[in-house]
Length: 538
Image (cartoon, rainbow, N blue to C red):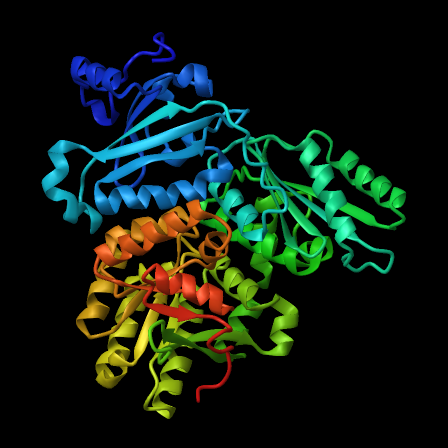
């Protein structure tokens, strides 16, 4: 044991830990740290070298998400590994990086606690149980580079995961050429990459949200963000390139906002910046007041948005979802497309939906989409259509009653109208949401969890709700095409989905190589441009 000075701690709720038994277990593992974790991923017991490794005593970690022990760049991978533990009761030793300043290589292994072995299947469906995780140091090896220019998904995921960090900051950097457009030269990207690499620590994540637009999530503000902009300009000039650089910092601490409001506002900010840079953020209402100030100003736009929804100022485009075996179309996903005039006022579809959630208009928007999808199904008797359903609507008794009345008046709709539960807004009342899921399935409606793996909540939904399909976030496919470790994580997720009796769907499949990989991993259904772009129902 690396640090004998750190003592064993009791778990939550006053439960007394059998210190001697725990100490023997800890000694036999030859690990640096020992954790007991709930199926929801919360630490219930901690022992070992937390003080020396992570700068806080073990008791400070009680109640926290276990993923915070792992370095930020590896947390998405850790979520996938934890799903393996939930599905198979065992996590073989898997390498990650610790969330210390140097990203110490560690090995994490896990087992379901023996007392809960008989309840393994029940826990996978939302029951109780505990898991033991051991964390051991690995010999020092050359570390993977900090994921500079890792992609927009990495930055978005990192920003949303930092919900409880009082000092965490999102830095936004926009680089443009002399004409004001994002530079198309690969040399410029290399210059930005090099400048960011010199500033980042292991607990930072940086990536390109869109051409010329970069995001960095860090513990505390970057040392000299304005200086970074000047450095990029000087480096570009030295390479014979002209560039303008604008920077902005957005603190992730949002006093006065609920976690749900903070998440929605942050998603909206990132989408606005990726779409149109600093100007789009200002047009959306972001300024020096940060996330709380934006939420306050956004309220003034609620009435115009409500009128757009009530007037059904949108259309639906339908993208096929096919069987990976014979490529036959199984059903279509209905994708919202605002009218051009509405889109110019509120932004693209993602922003339109995000603003509706932020303003408390999710139920009105979801109901409008349900009606439009129902009309499409009536017009095309051979089609099955999946409509996106916000978690906010799923947990609403009023929305549930309205939807059930809709299906009861027209029972034939239930077998042809499907619902994809999105994670854009996290479900707060899981009991009400579970009642909605059960009532819809009783009427024969197929339900799917959308963007599985994009956030920690989706893993919880899989345990809490009985669903028929699970759509894996497209980022896992892209990573799996590059990394054997990520392929293993994706395979574990497919196995977990199969364990709970659901079918797996892979999105964003664009090439035959990607389709071949998904088929080899046992994915049931596929969606992406390879099989068809969104359009009218055939």
